[in-house]
Length: 288
Image (cartoon, rainbow, N blue to C red; front, side, top):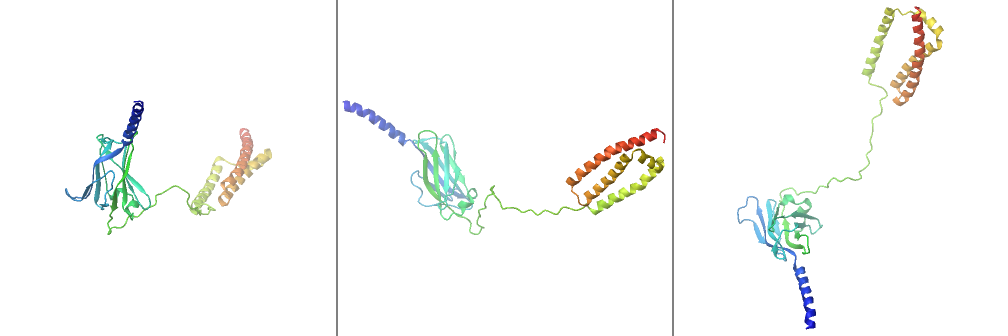
């Protein structure tokens, strides 16, 4: 009696382990079919898929064919919707893979279909049939399903150009690019330069005419230089220097070399011009 009492719990635990180990995902009522474009009912290929033995012959997929799989996913023999359901196609030479998700309802019924256009170029040019594996899994303790169900032979059109693999654009190190820049221009455009020179020369007669109209008197030059010789001398010299700086900038100087000299000469022009014009104002107020 004691032996039986100690044996019963062990048997129950063992039985529970067997039931748990037997709980796994699978499928039932799986039908695979291949139909050409515009094919009627009954035309094309059709067969049943097994959950433990793959089809004996490869399934052929032509250029205008559509492969379709309909099945019922089951967990522990009962129809149920898995969390993951994929058909995996693998190139047996390179190991490259692509997957197609199954559309599965709550009743466990699912389907997937594709054509040659849905396959990557690398799989279209495979020398061996593609290995098709069905994957079914979900949360919980049930073991997922991952078995080889059939082989797929992709038949491309021999008369059409074979698809070529194009390497995708990836960011990375590229070859060094040596830029050849044009030489800096030594002077401005001739047409624009001539236009502005003529424009400046045309203002000279206007300047002298304005002086004559306003009553400019050169006899006051001696009085101005005698009253403020330094201010008038610096003012006139700074104007001449500024014109020389502009000429050098046009001829060969750069902007960064011109600005410091123009700033210094401009400051001298401002300070000396203030003193020189103040002297002129004092003479005009004295009615001279």
